[in-house]
Length: 289
Image (cartoon, rainbow, N blue to C red; front, side, top):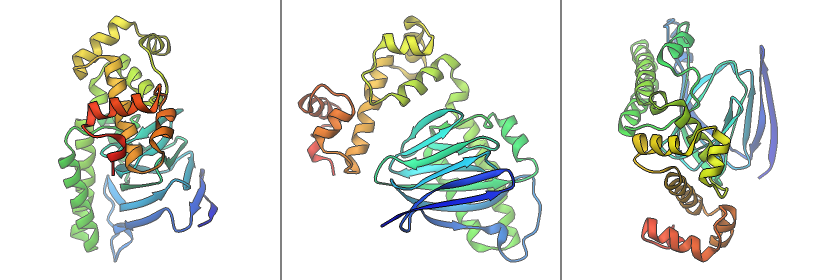
């Protein structure tokens, strides 16, 4: 398969990037374009469905005119927005925001995400009121509830009549309300959130408490207190857990050999990595399928 450059300009927004063969494969429904639907609702659905990505694909928006809820199902996405680079794991959500520059690609060989794209005269204001307008990543505490809303959105969008379009728009609002309620970041102190973002951006590094203190501007004592209070763990225990979870995800997608992954994730040796992996998951890295 070949990599092919694509670009599009709509008003003040520029979208460009690379396709790879048939990737990304979009499986979207566009209920607002179906039949005679012309109703204007404060929050409206434009598209919903899922898409399949390959590591060679890339998309970047300059001055985004789009708001989208991107719900990762398989693989790992790299999402950049507001000068932050985030690794979005399965079960996590990233929000494509209005009026900013952002980009996405997948770190694993392939990845799949569910998508809802919204519009509407009161969408921006609703995002502000719900505290979602500056959120990049959400880690849902109740995935079943999120899954159910996505399922209902897709079911209503398949039917193509005005009544179901109206219900789909209602589900968009319900999704935003649920995301706002589950957005744990809004309930965390900014010092803790800053530390979490730094940890997730440096999982491949050898991270120490001293380095975390230096790069977040938060004292070690405060970090210990916040991690214990909100996450029931210590900063370094959390980092090691997340580091191992990421290693397991990369192994499942067969991107690296065990030796390569140990080096990539800065473990002292493949043997040490294998020992720590078995302690956490009960199997060796080579047993991962």
